[in-house]
Structure formats: C-alpha cells, structure tokens
Image (tube, rainbow, N blue to C red; front, side):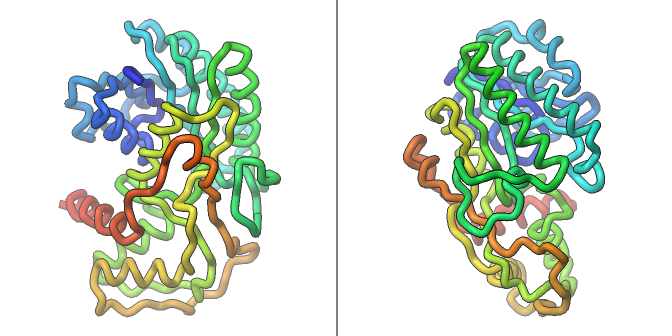
Amino acid sequence: MKRAIVTGATGMIASALIRTLVEKNVEVYALCRPGDPKTDEFFENPLVTAIDADISEFSAVPGKIDKKCDVLYHFAWLGTFGGARNDTYIQNDNIKYTLDAVKLAYDTGCECFVSAGSQAEYGRVTEKLTGTTYADPETGYGIAKYTAGKFSRMYAHQLGLRHCWVRILSVFGQKGNPNSIIMSSLDKMLRGEYTSYTKGEQQWDFLHCDDAALAFYLIGEKGKDGKVYPLGSGETRMLADYIKAMRDCVDPSLKLGIGDLPYNEGQVMYLCADISELTEDTGFKPQLTFEDGIKRTAQWMRGAKK
C-alpha cells in the first residue's frame, strides 16, 4: 500500500489509523468535515494531505486528489449518538453516503474498500460474534450499518473493488466517546470521583484504538474480498474486573460503587468478537493489554486537560 484515503479522519479509530499509516510510510488523504479542528500532530506530516469534504460531497473529492490511491477506509457517519441513532432519515442518508464512498474509491484508482460497521448490526447475541453470525439489528443505526454493508459490497463488486466490512465492538482510547463506560469512568477516576455501577457481571470485549487501527491497516493490505470481520480483542472479562483494573491504573485507593445501580432493561450481558478468521487472513493480534491501553488513554486525557 502506497496511498490511502481515510474518511471521517478526525474520529478516534480513523485518527489512530492515520498515525499507523504514516508509521508505515503510506501517503494519506485525510477527509475531514469542514470546521473539524485538525489538532492531531499527523496533520503536520508531509505524508498527510487534509481535504475538507462533507460526507454529502464526496463526488467533488476526486478532483482534489492527483495521485492513484490503493485503499479507501470509510469511517464518516452521521447520527452516531443519542436519539439520532434512530432517526430513520439520517440513517438512510448514511447508506447513500457509503455508496458515494465506494464510488470515490473507484474514481481515485483504489482496488480495495474497507468500511467501519458495528456490533449493533448483530442485535443481542449470546455467543462469540463471527462474520457469519445471524444479524438482527434493533436500532436504526444498526439497521443502516447492516444495509450499507450489503449494498456497498454489491456496488464494490460491480466496480471491481475488493470489499471488507469491519463490525467494531467496544473500542476505547484517545478521542473516544466521552459518554462510553470506559471513557466516562476513566475521566471520573482521574478526578478522584466516586462512581456508581451495576454489579458488573457483563462479559465484554474491549480493544484499544491503536490495536483497532492496526487491524484496519492489515485488512486493507490482506483482508479477503467479501469478508465481514468482527473486531475486538477476542477475549472477555467481567465488567467489574475492567473497572477495578482501571481504578488500579489510576489510584488503587479509590472506592468504587460496584453494585450501586440496577441493570438496564435489555442489558447486554455478553459481547465478544471471534477474531480467529481475522488473524488467519491478516495476521492481526492485539498488541496492547487492557491495562496498557488504559495507561495510554489516561496519559492522553491528562494532556488534553492542560
């Protein structure tokens, strides 16, 4: 891979991927929503060209790229939080924008299209998630991701592109969603605050964004055409154990309110990716332990608050 395009370039995994691509000496065209702050150091790297491009305006991008590219990584998506996840008009637009991204890949000479899907495509499942696990999404967001995956594969094959769809589980790290369980808990722990939780018996799978970025890079290089890859660490621990591990990384003396809260209705109690096929096809294996990822994230959060 010599050149790649990354949409949604200022997001958590996209940013981590661009850092990884630069480390691999890959030229990157970073597509950013107009107005998004370009504060990452990689924007100063000569290998990175930032292009302001709204998700609805991908058709204008080929005229701004003067070299043949190899892989397009698609992360841009509207309505990822709150009530917008069930806004049917917004989510329906995302399907079209994903097809626009496939066309952009074709117009810029790419041979591969790699896109970010979601574990929300599966709905509630009690076994390890594979690329062929039956999908029954329950939210507009999950339905749109599932449909975009199907349609974009069809369109990519019509255009002669290799297509890989990555269903992301629980990724955390620098620039992560501040409302997620990991990021919100870590923020409160760094402030020395007492935090309440459920009993934390959920068996979940967490992966640091730098490992997620490595997986995306390898999928672009070696992923098999037509494959759906669930992405996580491939291992679970009880949520209470993750919380205690975070506390121990920050301040072992902090008290935790584990068991203070009841479970939400419909609480997902098990979530884990089967990454055996991903490892077999690309060689991907997580490089960071959960604790390593927490330390890296905490260091970033401390710097961001200065």
